[in-house]
Length: 473
Image 1 (cartoon, rainbow, N blue to C red):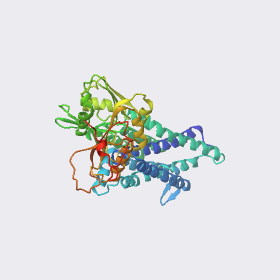
Image 2 (image 1 turned 180 degrees about the vertical axis):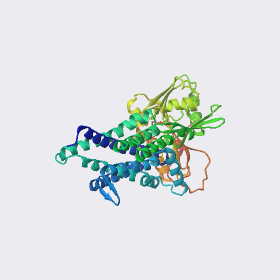
Image 3 (image 1 turned 45 degrees about the vertical axis):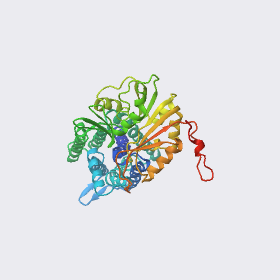
Image 4 (image 1 turned 120 degrees about the horizontal axis):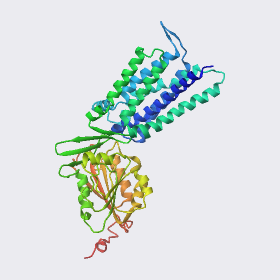
């Protein structure tokens, strides 16, 4: 039988290992979003890169037998320490935004532009090995327990491991990323790993312990506020990596490396925002009847910025965007007629009973970061339900101007299935003769609700009613 203190120490190690694995998985998913997006395809690759090595790690850890390896005696304790220090060394590069930025940039420069392939390479280089080594922890630790009560001990081991995984999934995202930021959450993982190595070492001042804390300090420097600020990052929570780029006259907002918003010192905004303002908002800026306007995808809150008359609801999942926009883009507070709802778009539509005169869909920042659940027929139908009779929907998509790729054709088909007879305005210059499928611009759709929109007719030589259909003056 082992004493109580040792038993608690072993269960603490199991708990923290479970925490680090799940937390690292979520951090990896979050860190690659600016480069490969948050689609289920890329997320599934990282999950697979955690689960499979974890399974092999369990197997390898169970087969380990302590003994002499040449002139060195490798004990279970030494094996655990070795696994932890190697995992820490690899994760130092795999979870640090600075390194990830260089890594994905070089992949792109080398001609590897497919995001699924990019994430696969990232996972093989930075995720598989440390998870495999960390996965050996449970079977290695189990050697310290008595075999007489195997089922009881196994249950406890799985309980503490799963509890650690639970905390890694919940605490690291809902608390640490939200309050301290993704980069500081990364640093906390390294502090935990260094603490485990220190706990396992009999000599608390050994070279291994000092190396572990040196790696931790280096990780903290690479993920410090100073490093983030040097890259223009002003916020890095569980939803967005927010970058602000200033020029002499302009302020630019980037969300997960996608150009999201702009405003200059004269109040001018991005051309597609200016187009929406001019077409839909300027005619009602000073109207006696106050209109209800819904913006799904707040960005920099620049849509309708000068309008202090109508009622605005801005909806975005990131609760920090309002403060960021007021501080860095608008350089002032939102007017009292504008209200921010930090909630997912579909959840807001389920929640609100208000009907709107104008709904603007602006959550589609780029192909890699396209929110899949906001590009479906069901979502568009839900949006339409919140439209007043005669109301207008405007949507900005980053798409091919000539329908040169599958997404541009399919999003057009999906949108117009729900919002027929929509106008499609291409903003920005493009080469009509180019066959480049990656050539994309702002494609702004405008739809005005019409009770007779289901009336469809095709003119033929045999049945032609054009003369009857043309409105008579």
